[in-house]
Image (tube, rainbow, N blue to C red):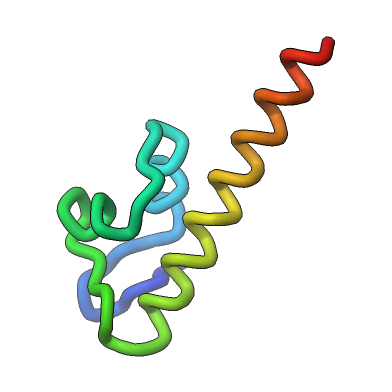
Length: 66
């Protein structure tokens, strides 16, 4: 799904970047050209990034406990 239509950035691109270790919106701006201040897409990108980070951390904790 497109998160930013203006720059043709998809949720898959954001998820892939987060899975590779990107944890800051500023880094996504550099890597993908994600806008930081142009309205709704900035908020969606930030929320999606945080969701992936939280999920990745949860999996790491679960794996360490196993």
